[in-house]
Image (tube, rainbow, N blue to C red):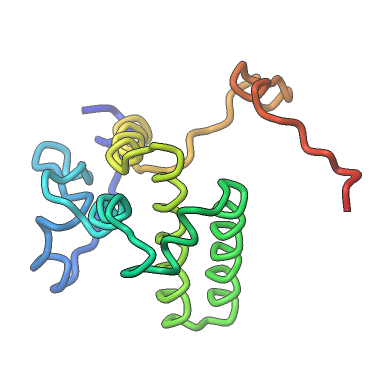
Length: 165
């Protein structure tokens, strides 16, 4: 157990509905640390990810169009939905936040599918952060991040042409 976990007083809330479906959740409390750990049972995002391989234009035309679109288009949908979640939050529309969050997660899972990223990879990353930081938050910036140094992988990314309309 890391020092961060020992010092953390963070608890993962459980509602009656979530405790009834605990085995279906992608993250469940780990009995050793009390922190969330990847479940052995599929959660809704895992179930969605697996079902994307079986999408047909006849049964799911909108999802089929999304999966047939470009990575850029799918990424644009993720950005759009994230903005809509934020707008609903600013307006204090709880139900809107829920609906738009579902849309955001749907498009994010489609993006993972396109990139060949299994949801378990995301849960492992979150667990690693929780083990290190006591919560699955974004890690602190490194010295090279603060100095603006590019990582090796970022040099492989295409440069954006900011002069295009």
